[in-house]
Image (cartoon, rainbow, N blue to C red; front, side, top):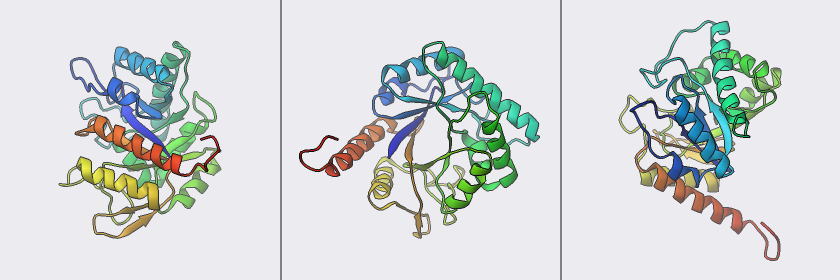
Length: 255
């Protein structure tokens, strides 16, 4: 299981100063593309940090919503959405290539991420954008969900591979989606987030807000860079993942 974080989201005088501190603990950096956060200098620095620490670079595109940090749903025609995604992915990949790197996956941000999980037509638009995108044959990261087999079949129609992601610091609804940030308790505190994450590592399950048990495959865990204690959480999860990896290595073999 890999650890990822949404980064590169500072914009002008508005700073989110955890990129350098958290980069040393993660495997994958979901770097903003300028439409919800991330000005050119911020993106350049985030890419440089990812390359310095051998962290995989992912594009983190959103609805065009700087004022709302990409957390407001927008009605977009499919061709407009595809062009919007291609613009962002190409921009980040171009900046990465200027430093010797490249974009290796895409993870939509905020409202777009949540909307595509529940709107089949929108999800198919995102998949179409991936299939004909500026960076070929890279995975799409989406939320791990009990309906993962159906999601994988949809993606396969477009030749797209999915990476399933779970959230250490977000509470889940009984139907397997993220609880809206508008509700109290939607973002977990550090202790509860660590408990949720380690339960996933050990048992592959999440306890929803009504105490029901959700089971789903998870390729990567996300810690949000704007959550309280994000750096400490990332460090604790890195230690937990490393311990579990080492415990599965037989004596006398290499990790």
